[in-house]
Image 1 (spheres, one colour):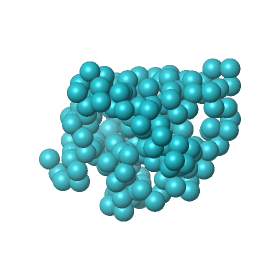
Image 2: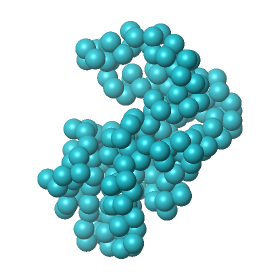
Image 3: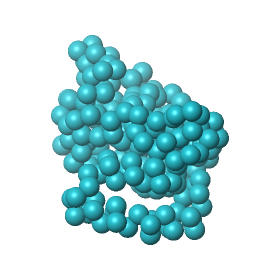
Image 4: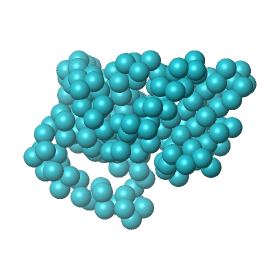
Length: 196
C-alpha cells in the first residue's frame, strides 16, 4: 500500500486559493476594499506580531461572517469545480493521476478551507484534510472550527486519519517550510517539485 500526501496552495496550485476564492465570491472591488481595511492585520502579520493562522482567520471573519451557510457552501462548491481547476499546475495533476493509476491512496493536506476544495478533490477521487470553518445557527462565523492545518498540525491530522504503519511507501509533496513536518513522514519527498 502506498500513501501520497499533497499540500495544495503553491504545490498543486500556482496561486493561493484563499484569496482567489474571496475574489470569486465578493468580486474584485469588494476584495481590494477589504484588503485596504485589513492593512493593520496584514502589517501585523508581516512584522510577526500576528501569527499566519490568526491573520487568515481575521480575514475569513471580515469577508465571510454572517453568510448563510447553505448559500456559502454552494458558492464554494461552484468555485471548486468552475474556477479552481484554472489554478492547478499541470505537473501536479499528472502526478496525482499517476498515483491514482497505481492504486495509491492520495490525500490533499492543506491549511486551506475544506469547503472550496472538497468538490475538486471528490472529482479527482482523492481524500482531503483541511481547515474547517465554524457554522453557528446556519451562518458562517468566519472562525476556524479546527486548528489551522499547517506545520505539525498536518502531521497530527494525517496520523489521526491514517495508520501510517500499513503503508509500504509514503510520498509527500510541499512547497513551503510549513510543509516540512509532513515531508518528514515520507520515504520519498518533493519540495517545489524537486526530490529532496
